[in-house]
Length: 332
Image (tube, rainbow, N blue to C red):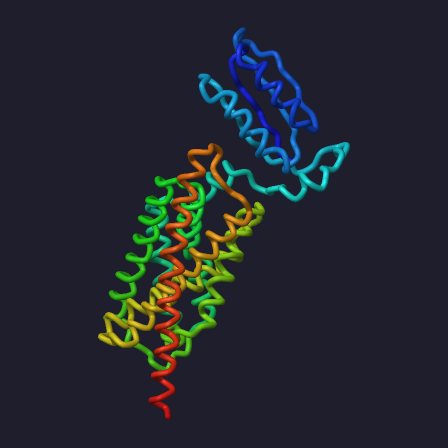
């Protein structure tokens, strides 16, 4: 459930109160405030109707001034309210659009902390892979912040939010650039250990890598849409992005361009797969803009990104099959 706190001018309150009553809240109350021209409303809503009510309030107050709606998650209510009808339950979202957008935008922002974490996680991953240390590689996955910009790009496409799209793309490019630079620099300090299974596995590009990345991206987007912690899924996403990125930098510094190209292919494949699956999940959960015009822009952005991503994915899968056939011929 959600609690909506609405602060607005008294002259605009009647329209909002009618909207509140129309959506059958669990409870609502109007408070007296010290300012004579102000009204404060507090509403308790089921999750299945919270998004619809917040959208209705926005439409009612869109041309008004000096108003604000605060959304607060509720853990429990005593006594328990009447359950929703089946139709409302099917449309129920655990996270409202505004809450999801706020969380994803914050995680996709390009900050000094993001760059520092990207560099530190690359150091841990590069050293761990080169020494075949599984624990170190897992530690790098935990602190790697690459989940945010991937989900931000997917959500920006789903909502037609060009600002979020640009910011997420910039953040992802910056994070991967830092990872490549740090790993490249480490290659002049660390002698490359070609016997390391952790390192050499990041040069193996197979079709099962597609399934892994698709599952990881879908699980990450679904966990965000359900309001659950994405930390564990973030580990899966980091596993798909950071290790091949660090391996790419190490192989480039060592002059192993053949191995570097395979790591680059794995990295690029994983990025495309993560994006495609996250786009699909946000679309299936019907996370969409509020207005009709915004929805048209979102549809356009969604299909453009889906078309480009799927085209790149098909191309990469063809390259994987060609490489596998080439290796089979060499072995034969």
